Amino acid sequence: MEDKLSILLVEDNVLNQRIVTFSLKKYNHEVTIANNGLEAIDRFKESTFDVVLMDLMMPEMDGLEATVKIREIENTETPGSRTPIIALTANTMDNDREKCLSYGMDEFMAKPFDIEKLKKIFHELEIVK
Image (cartoon, rainbow, N blue to C red; front, side, top):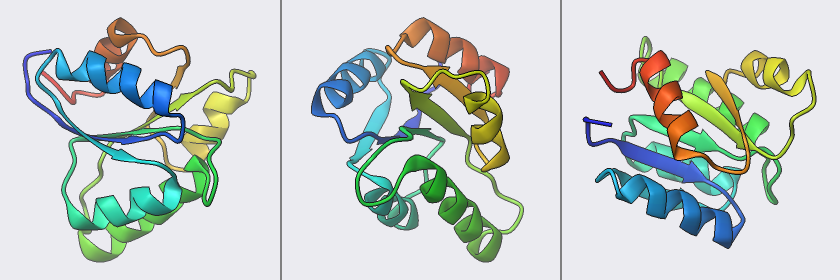
């Protein structure tokens, strides 16, 4: 990955946070962690991110609801802008991807985390050139 990205990682599991952060920092990406959907919304309001990696199952507010709120913030405060949101989840049922996309996510990646798969998604979504 050539471009240095500002990434919001929304994940409640500390081990997963460490694995993903370690992998992304090897490519010099800046990672901000939110432990649940409510924190994600706060972080999103405070900063600009190139991409959001969103877990689905979290306490306080799940990833689907947080995605809807982020899209509402974008539509209200910065019309025309859209930050890519990638689901990063252990849920891998056939309809999970479609459900994530219907809530406003841009792509879906099953755990366990794989940096090579994520790099491919970044290129497909044109997050990096």
